[in-house]
Length: 245
Image (cartoon, rainbow, N blue to C red; front, side, top):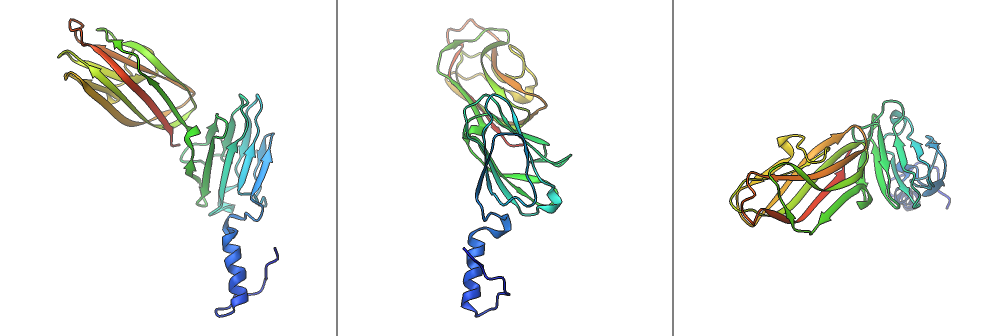
């Protein structure tokens, strides 16, 4: 498609039409060519015209380095891992430049993607799909002991910040029941991440933000102050971690 390069004049319908088509093609995103594909490490250039980048990793991680933020104000990029290989797509800001406050972002699952936009100094995630969400559920009735014990875990979380929420349905016989997620099996990292109840047939839910400096496994741990009651059990539990930075 050819576009006029003359100045747009109010009332000039031809030039207005050209201008509308330019906007429709997202000229601010430089995306006259919408899609490109890579299967090796790649540094995005200021002159690249793609808006969507498909990355095939195979068995090894592939790093996509973003261009200098100061030269790419308002630019939008969507980056997707398209294969089922065990390698991850590592998205890296140039130098110390960040994506939602962190220098790298990792996509581990096939068809996982993030869409990011630059404000001239750093990049921000404006969209991502469920492949950046980690979740584990369990419907087994579990007997709760008087010491911290692990009942199941959520693995594969990469370094970064997460919005974490968990839900559990407690059958408690009038004693304190404690539920937590921790980075150590059968332990409590902090009371901040712990819920407690005295009530029988009580659902517990908690949401918080937590940042991990390295790849992490979250353990779903619980304990009770007394196991004399037959009702010190829980069921229908779930952990969900959504990557936010």
